[in-house]
Length: 280
Image 1 (cartoon, rainbow, N blue to C red):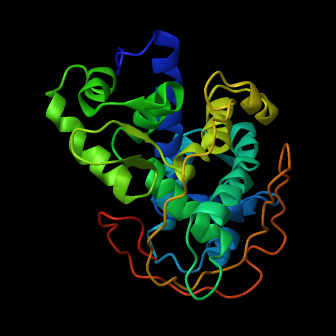
Image 2: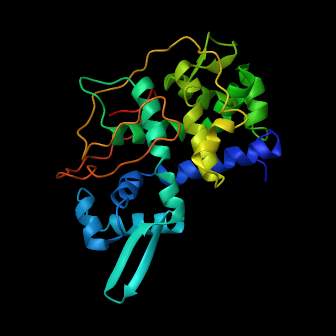
Image 3: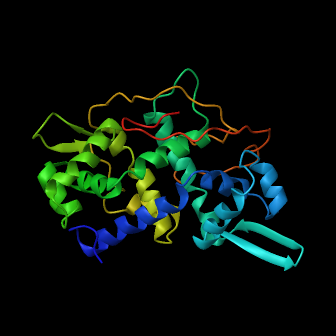
């Protein structure tokens, strides 16, 4: 069933990317996947690597990742069970440095640079806003679009005024711009810079090699840079570990995970993400 008024292949692409984001964005999922980037681990070994999770939190997370096809449970004997990446889960790992590259450029840092794991989590929070993937796709392909026209494309079965809450959120997040009420919407510099990220997610969700992202019909073709827009964020939070940094210019970033959980971690309280961008 179509979710937008876009062509079927485009609608399917957006649906795949949205589904991919729904798999990896829930809290702790990326950290668990990164902890499993080495050889498969027993449950207790994995629990030691993600020690900030409270008792009873890890098992349902692992089950959801297994159900999503990203983690596999292997029962060697009744007493020897290990968890590791599926082929699909392993193929996701090179997408993460692409996200870091975007975040390094477009997420405002506080008094210190954000740890890469927080850059990934905060970036994913922005991309999973309601209708975000479809709105960004339309603005990337059509440059400037009115709110009414966006509503007809992105949510054709809904009242057209329902498009404004997600639009206001994306403006507050710094991904789209407008000159005011009644004026068309366009991608900001940060929104336009998401091309490699969404292209990589599209390629991964379609089961294609990551280097196919540059051939995406929309995300593989950068526009002229819009005027930069300041990013607003709050104080950063301590991170359990540091991730390797991805750098602009790498065609296919390589993920290294040797130092991810090299020291003890501490728990963080769960906080709501209010309008106006991610809180750290």
